Amino acid sequence: MNILLPTDFSENSWNAISYAIDFFEPVACNFYLLHVSRVDTFMAGDTGYVPTADQIEDIYIKPSKQKLRTLLKELGEQHKPNKNHKFYTLTDHGFFLESIRKYVNKKKIDLLVMGTKGASGLKEYIVGSNTGDVITKVKCTTLVVPEDAKYKPIKEIAFPTDFNLSYDLLPLQTFTNILKTLEASLRIIHIHKKGGQLNTEQLENKDVLNDYFEEFKPSFHFLTNGKVEDAIQCFVESRDIDMIVMVAKNLNYFQSILFHSNVEKITYHTNIPFLVLHE
Image 1: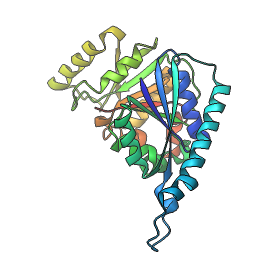
Image 2: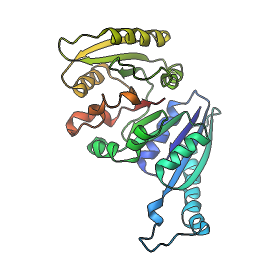
Image 3: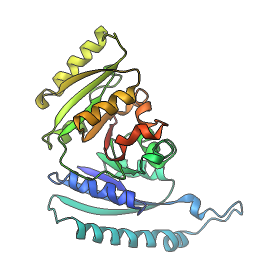
Image 4: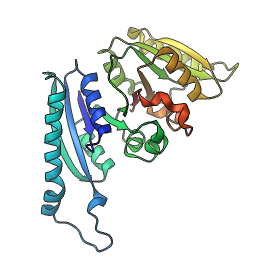
């Protein structure tokens, strides 16, 4: 499995990288640590000044490489050696999203792992930030690791769906590969309005998902709540959920979970990672 780990050398990106190493302990992985020096840090106003390749190398690339070497050393000290895991470092300069897209294609990346800031800044952070941009604009399955998430064996996974499969089942492949490495219960959740019934198409899609995940013995849960995020929150807390999984095409439906403006309501995001599946 090829995993891209973008880092800005913050606590929060360190935590996401550590989580990924623990989470994929039994899996053969190539981890690519990427640092992108932001283009605006060397744009000197409107003077038309463009740094030379040598200046970029000296001012941005060399220090990045040094920091990545230090990071690798620290990771080696914190995590026990694992013959399944190989680490590589990548440095780039320019625009973050372009770099991510470039390396996703170049290194045939299966999964991106990104950290987020704590709940207090979740709305701003996810909507107007690197992580939010990656989730919505890069077609690569992404594991989002909140700042306070500490790895523990995954036992319970929540998979919210509206049963309107506007995607083929291809995006679910990475998820099923991950499920095979876990001994976890898969809880498929549907939230509906009071008295609401599934239509014929939704019922068919429920069967499709049931068949697709058959080997993992999924259970289906139907929650009645006017607010999607309240229903999910109750479910997550009552079931002690360890991970939430969503399909990117469904993000509009779950916008309220990710972009809830009332900080008190999103406490469950402070420590539960979520996996966003892309085609």
